[in-house]
Amino acid sequence: MIRILRIFYYSKIKLDIPPQYHLILMEYSDYYKGLSQPLKVRFLKRLVISKKFLNFQAVQFPMVTDEMSVLITSALIQMTFGLRRYVLKRFKTIFVVPNTYSFAQYPALLGHVDHDKNVIAMSWPAIKKGYIIPDDAMNVALHELAHAIQGEHQKNLFYNKFFSRTKKIKWSKEGLLEIYRIRQNKSYLREYAGQNLSELFAVSMECFFEQPDMFKKNVPKLYVLMAKLLNQDPVNKKYPLLS
Image 1 (cartoon, one colour):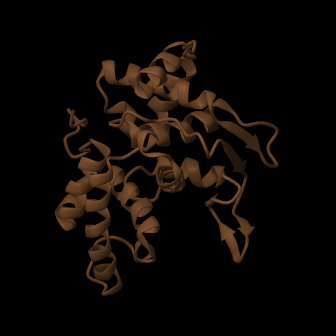
Image 2 (cartoon, rainbow, N blue to C red):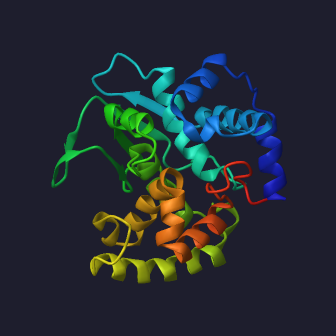
C-alpha cells in the first residue's frame, strides 16, 4: 500500500522537463549518453522529480545554476537508476562551494556529508572535474551522494529503504574481506576505501561506474554483489539495467 501511495504521489508531480537538462547531461554525463532513448526519458523524469525534493544552496556563488543542480542530481539518479527508490528524504540540503574548504579536523575537503545536520557539501570545481574526466574513478558527486544514500538506507524504516536487506548484508560481508585486502595492499581499490565499509561503498560506487571493466576484472565478487545491489551492470553498456 505504501509503495502504491508513493507511486501515486510521484505521478501527481508535474513533470516539466527543461530542454537544457538533456543538453547538460549530453555534454557531461557519459552514463546518460550511453542510455537508449526510452531510458534517457526515464532518467530525466526521475531527475526532475528528485530535484524537487532537494534544496540547493550556493556558498560564495550568486546562485546554483542549472548546470550545477542537474549534474549533482544526476549522480543520485545514476546510482539509483535500477532501484525503485531514488528520492532523498533526509539529506535534502546541498551546499555548493567554490573551492576546497575546512570542516572539523579536515583542512581541505572536496565534499562531505554531515550525518548530524543531514546536509551535504561539495566543491563545484571538483564535481565538474569528476564528469570532465569520466574514467579515473574519482567523482565527488557519486562519492558523497553514495554516503547520503547509505545514510538514509540505514536510518529509514524497512519499507522505505533503498536496498534489499539480504543483498546489502552480502555486500557488507564481502566488503569486510576487501577492506582486509586493501590494508594488505592487495586490492585494486584505492587505499582510502580501506578505512571502513562506508568509504568502501563510496569508492566502490566511483569505480563501479567509471572503471567497471577493471573493477569486475580485479574485484569480481564485490563487483557482482554491487551489480545485484544496484540492479545495474555498467559493463553491459547496451543493457545496463538487470531488470
